[in-house]
Length: 267
Image (cartoon, rainbow, N blue to C red; front, side, top):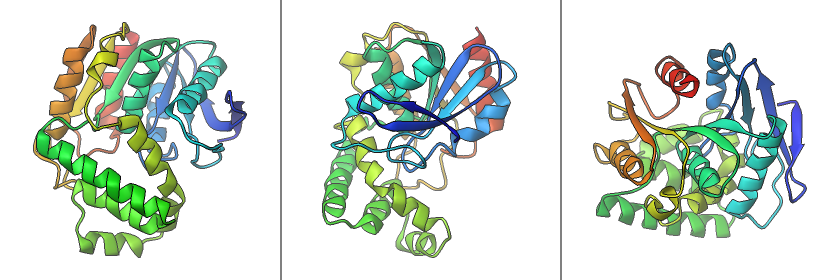
């Protein structure tokens, strides 16, 4: 990511820009430095000017402390300035929650697409979220990045064998470098439940996108976890459209996601 903008607190935020047409900004989720959304850039760049950025604390972006969600909104505001003052937003997973917070805060957003929002709706899911946050806070307070990433993996249902395999994989060190940002995503999600009161103030047209199939890498999540979150969010938004796609997993699948995003943002 060779370009930079400067956020309100002086933090440098790295981004890429590609394509022509109305601007759209891609916002990533937990343990993502912008790589997961990058697959959408070539798929959208023929119709849109695509901005993909590394959220603070990730890749080449800075990370001024202390962390506040408002600072992430300032980062996104700086990207919107670079995009000409306003843009569509696409947010995946926790990035979708950040996108909704940006719209609720009054940032100059045109249309929104949020994919697989990880809000907790069922009581058991809310309890799992609370337990995860407590475990995550303990691990990070002790400087135990390894334990923090393992806690995140267990939240989705990874077993001991899965975690041992991940620790032996080449990408583990990269995940450890991103571990402190798990606290940022947790802060964005708050108590885990959809913030219906704030969502009710969002006036933009919003597509709430989910998958029709369970994720084999997240066996601990109840069937319909993402759909339940999507339904509650869509019911709170004044101008929501629901869309369900056939995609293999939680990570953005370009062949399934891009056509829906392109059609909605061009509508």
